[in-house]
Amino acid sequence: MSGQCQSHADFTGASAQYRRVLLVVIVINAVMFLVEMTFGVVGESQSLKADALDFLGDSATYALSLWAVGKPAATRSNVALIKGFSLLGLALWVLGSTLYYVVVANSPSAPIMGSVAIAALMANITSVVLLMKYRDGDANVRSVWLCSRNDAIGNIAVLLAAGVVVLSGSHWPDLMVAFALAGLFSHSAVQIIQQARAEQISS
Image 1: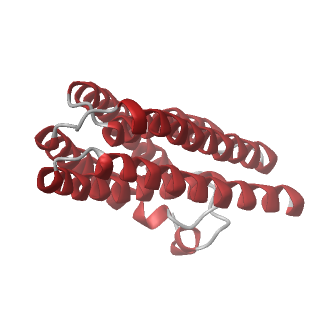
Image 2: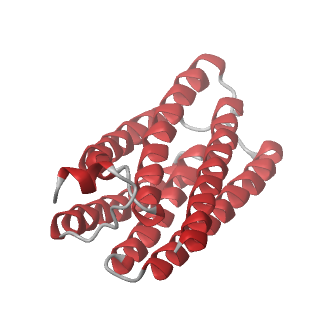
């Protein structure tokens, strides 16, 4: 792949190397969904469960991105729109479920939150490093980068929340991180939708 493709927004992902990288990232996200959701339930952590659902959503949408590579521009922008609206839907679900847990939640297990968040952070850093040179591209390619970046930010936030839970003995830090993740998902969803619509207009 040329340096020009790697650094400009007209890169469509149409390279064997990008497909291989994306496939590895899909596997990483699928495995981490199972890990985080399991320990999110065991540790009664809403932020871990929110992050696990993000892993699941990423696995599905990255698979859709992989399918869209090499397709016409209209198809790629439509796929990006689907991903943007699905990310927005995830944000609304996390927001709603977290509001529910404000009333009923117990304090989460900080050791579980911290240890699982470290594993998830390592997984997401690996994904971010693999995708770094593909961060500039069309809406379909860029959405993959944004989701992976969000995941790494989210894992750092969960780690910080785990530390505050230990100090305070309260479930509020966990819930606040879940609220923040919902906001981050919404912001990225809007970016993806705006770029995809702009590409539809220009194509």
